[in-house]
Amino acid sequence: MDKDVKIYYHLPGLFEFYDLYSIFLPLFREHRDFFYDNCEIGSIYGAPDDALWGGGRIGYGDENPRKVARLMDEYGISARLTFSNSLIREEHLSDKQCNDLCALFEKNGSSPNGILAASDILIDHIKRNYPGFYFVSSTTKVITDFEELEKELDREEFRFVVPDFRLNKEFDKLNKLTEVQKAKVEFLCNECCWFDCYDRKNCYINVSRRSLGEDCEEHKCVSPDASECYKFSKAMKNPGFIGLNDIRDYYIPAGFRHFKIEGRSLGSAMILEFLLYYMTKPEYCLNVREEIYLDSSLDLF
Image (cartoon, rainbow, N blue to C red; front, side, top):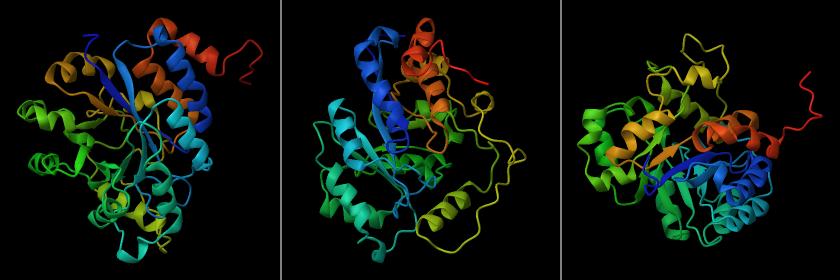
């Protein structure tokens, strides 16, 4: 892997995994020898509990936003507010909590902060009132048609576009993107969702309804393995999975630099496994575990 070519990981849990990142970020800065030379943290994304504009997953992050903002500022990390609710209406734009978050994060620190969005109404509101943000087109749009992806990449308001994970291996078409378009693609690497799911968009719509407080039943997953919890080992077998070797052997040579790691609804132990797999040199995985949680007095049972 060319050490001069930087790749950027966009990590989950801005509000959900504050405790983990408050340990990991100093480690990442002070022990760069533990980590691959060319990997960087492009952003950390998330939304607090009960955020009306939230989408993708029902948020459960309860960390104080000011503490989160200070941590991101201290380490120069771009914070992304996950405001990917696709059902926003005009009456929702006055929500105090979400507007307060925009006011707090818009000009926080030296790194520009972003908004993951799926609603043009919301984008227009934020552009008018909080022009300091950049925008990311959310994967909750479920863009599975490649021509639609190209159109989304050509929209000037988006700095990045996260396509549906089922386009991850469309190599013939991805190769034909322009360099400008390639620079905007942010691949979702570790999705565990059923590759043949025909109801994914309805799942996200259900989350949007619940975030708005609407009375609706929880979405019933149509996957044959719906009863199983997330397993990284299972995600690795998904046809859309992007592993470290894929990034090295195809995506970097092809001109792609941005990779999103999902996991806001998981536990911090699983997030650590993602950080170890994608960012940590194998010979230093134990060192990272020891610095974060592993000591000689730890009992598992």
